[in-house]
Image (cartoon, rainbow, N blue to C red; front, top):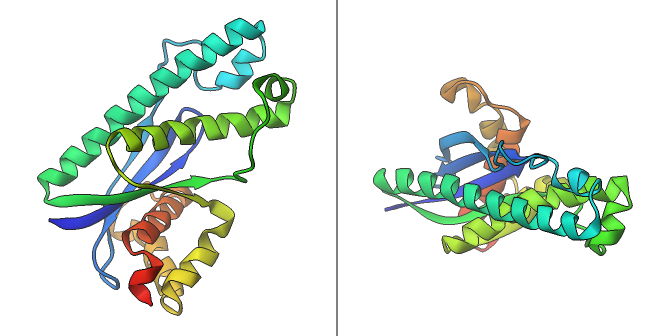
Length: 202
């Protein structure tokens, strides 16, 4: 089976999942899709911390726990479907990459709910963690990559080939068609870092 890797760039309740494969110089995007990891029947699920901030503390904790369970279940189902489809095409998932924002540690829930900027930060982490936990359940190794460090890591891993790789991914939409947004491009590049660790280019 051929090796493949998954890349994720998440938003509030949804994200893009891009699958890549191929040897260096022959890399290709083999799948891309939008995944939804919130239950529309669950009020406040797309912005769980915003909704929690309107509740009394015990109810806020219950709301977040319920949202987390639902998001992880939906993330697991979405990723499992991709894995099964790729395995049917004779691809084996070598790992996954999840793009992060700042990645700074969060304080206690009470402090998060008292700060609007922290609420936004916590929600970003909430959905990324749902993906990481779902991958863990599927025994897929996950690498968290800070988005602002993506270009630097590409240069460290691929050296002079990094620019060529970025151009190839940037123009991949011409062959696979729309949508091919900045989300897809970043997720694909992150996945390639997992597919080809720096040690394989030393």
